[in-house]
Image (cartoon, rainbow, N blue to C red; front, side, top):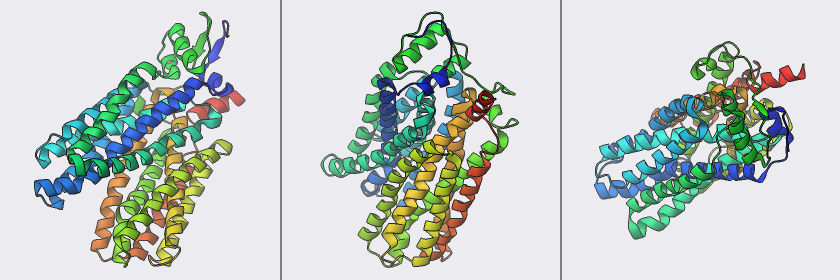
Length: 449
């Protein structure tokens, strides 16, 4: 029991063993990410049935498929500033409600235009959820385990994408494609009562916003399993900010170069990942492999990415995180270069695809764990969400450039080898992001002196 002390919230969390409630928070965020992964991937599984039922062409349905990624960008850019102003909990619950409700509503549409509009709104909710789970978990995870816990949380995305695929295979033959959308929307809505009951607000954000010590002590004590005396004072040691506007912090002195470097890293990483996962099956089929082999080989990228994320997160907690992420991107560059060299018919294809996923997705997920600590609490959600939002343009560009290169006659080897360039640029950019001390790095440096 603590008595009449001035308590630095971050230091308090870092010094204590992980409490059961902190593990519960990991589980709650993991469930949100599973739901996020389900609803991001859901249209890919129901699209063939919708196209058949409505008798429309694939290009005509492209409007529906492109709507959610646009919404993801809007949601990510809007959610961060909102979270830094009104709190993590409220924005996170609202985002889950949005993508759950609009996914269910999509099941009752009758035209591609109506479906595209609802997928845009669904994407806004999806784009807002991920940065807030990342930020909230980062503020309650002890520094020694933070990267590992966040990367484990992010593996829920792949799990959710796989889960909705299995659900679609079971539901569509019996109940039609609309049932998959209802299922995909019902699960996130089922999480909301749990979130309202169990999800804590960020104690560090409460301190920065001047909440009462009694309120902060109640929240922090619940999460950490501690009872505080009524006269404790809670603080969140932060660098002095040149502006109170969260977006302004991102571009202020000491943060501008780092912000640009993080955006460049995330953009380049998603460009590589989305071009690979989106076009690799087509490239392998064009090279002479069967559809089944192409699909199974591409799936190894996701499996490798899940394992790589956990290992990269574990390594980031042991040594300096930026060089770990950079090394993973370099490994990804070497793997895609190797894929271009050996060709699609090599016996080593599956292994290199697995290793490419291990490195690229491992690095990308590690970046999600790295970014929160680079920003102060008052702008943390904004920094993370804007990195995710700007990075989404990399996914859109990667998907588009793959088709453009194929149209120009590029083959498997050339396209795969070309991807080594953005992967290498990501490795360089993440190292540049650590050249400026900021966020928690500044606090730690000041404490050391």
